[in-house]
Amino acid sequence: MTVIAAVSLFDGVMLQADCRVTVSGGGGGVRHCDIAQKIFFLTPSLAIAFSGDVFAAAVLIPELRRQLRSRRHLDTESLLRWIPRFLRAGYAKLRSPKRRPGQLNFIIAGANHGRENVVERARIVEIMNKIARGQGVMQRSWIPSVLVTSLMTPASVSHVTIPGTVTPILAYAQSPGFFLHRVPPLSAVAIGTGGGAVVEMEKASDWLFAAGDDHMTRMGLEWIVSDFAIDNGIETVGGMFPAIKLDKRGLTPLGSQVDLPTVSVSVDFDWATKRWVQRNLTTGRELRLLRPEELVKSLPRASQRFDDYTEAWKKFSSRPTQV
Image 1 (cartoon, rainbow, N blue to C red):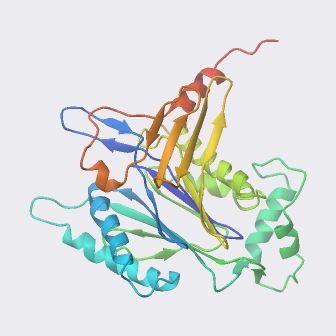
Image 2: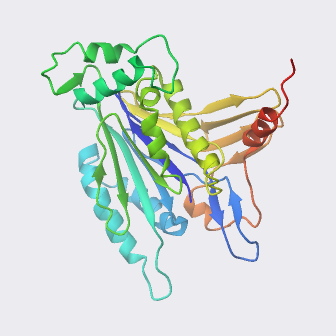
Image 3: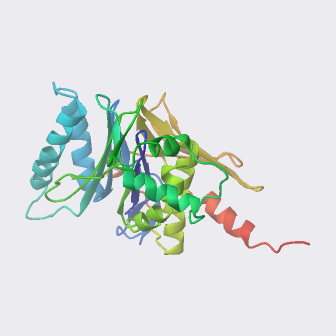
């Protein structure tokens, strides 16, 4: 399984996924392989991510992307009406006397460039109060300007328009109906075995929605989700966490690099090959992510974990402190 996590921000949407696929049977027992691509670009303003049945995803996602190439209406709202119908019909066709498809969940993230974001003022007040009272998870001595300017509006105003932005689109859908559930601005959603992380994401609303820049938001999202998986012993979540941001610039892949004295690791999107690549910069080890249709053709016979940083951190944090 997996964890897909996303946040609807002041200026767009950020979407993140782990890269672990769990393989069982075939005489090899249970194997955890950190080689699965779970986020896919659909248009310059729309992306989709999945959790659940890899075999079902291996059929539906390539066909979805293929049909997109011949569609006339590619605006975000038109696609949001069409995609659930496509998924519902395609998933139903996967049923046979010999096999029933497993649970399949999607998060759809996008940006509507025709309108600016409109945010509930009460939500902004809630985040500001958390910061002002020192109840947030991020220690700071400053407040993002978007919070200040938004709260300069009259208290009687229920919703605030954020100038110079786009309308963020964030929704999730679940098999078999794939009915689209919209997520409002300044909210979070998570699906998969690590879906419970959404509670921790809400606790960290001051960090996720008022971090000040994409790097800090991305780092907060990754730490919250990965810590949740570790703390709850969720073995089916792992590897690095590729992420994307959708805003007025369009769709931007967000890589990351984390460092310890003993190891440095990274995950980046290679535009030349259109692949996400995990790298241990210290040893030179690489693991490239595979699309679902590639995974099912050659399921790994042994575990291929990329927990280089996690293991190094465990050793580093357990060392005795010298005085």
